[in-house]
Image 1 (cartoon, rainbow, N blue to C red):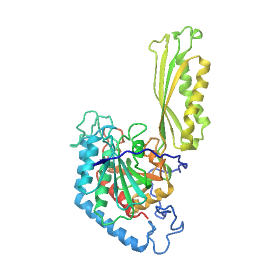
Image 2: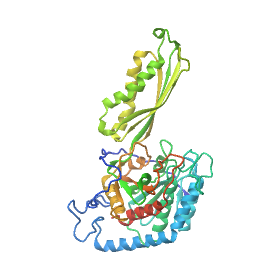
Image 3: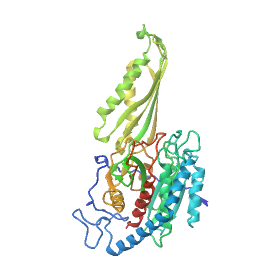
Image 4: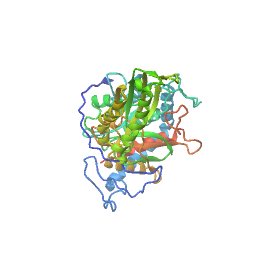
Length: 452
């Protein structure tokens, strides 16, 4: 085992606006991959070039090699399918909160070492990087490993053994899938491109462990980066993609207010703090909606408010907190100064003093078009019905920090069994259909095998 530590190289990213998309509807199989790892285009909008595969743009000879490697992956899945499920269940039963994923990291490392790979653990002891295949520009695959502070109520025999902590967002599945992908690829004689495995800690806390991974050099010598995320709205065997924003930036606003207080019969002799709170509650979201292009999917929602107890007393203190989300990268950079300007304008006439704490979270995940087409090709390898559109989510994901460094894409992995309720993530009853694990391995290995 070795440890790593590097300085971040960060750069600004030019993010595109997200396209509109439906929910869970098939995508036409006629889409073509438009670029290779070098960024050069291949194929055409009208159809593939002569001697190439319809969906991958691969020359006939390479098609044969890819088919042989895919057959080897299928053989690996038949032999190790139970292991794949066992890894997920072990991680599920032993969840670790953000920045405490030491045992999970060691578990992953032990299996990689058994496969004669050389994982490098971060100096903090949580999170690791492992390279496979030839040197040169690498294709990175990322999985997050942390759990949530939620008590599990699934009743499964492998349910969490840690009180108040559970894998309610599918990170146990993400980790098992990437581990399976690593071991399946490690058994192949040769890979067409170098691969970097990124097992990341602390996705569930802002600003996210991805920043640490980037600082440790996870994106050095990487040309593209990809990730899967469990989606209980999609049936197992289906994977959703979209070009443009697939998640949103997520910032937190906390407003603490202060006034002299007083009797409700004499509001003119004091600063009416409750009135001021009401002004901000309605005014800030309303004015943001008039200042920002609605096509950016920007929304401000309050989550908590508190002030006073007695019906005849104007309180001295109060608090508001909520979130601001947007799917547009350029808008994200404007939000904090705009929120501060609006709040000041709303509260100045009231005489109430205030302190505004604005905490920036993560940028939106904006899928690169070329990388999305690569994902589509990889997904179509599972069958013509595997590929789906997916809508943009209002949630935040720190995978976006990798996209500040290199192009990439995230896809949504269907984990619903097709029967019973669709149990949402971040709920104590969330669980997956474990057939999704093999589907995830197939997609990620296809990304590597079809790379050019």
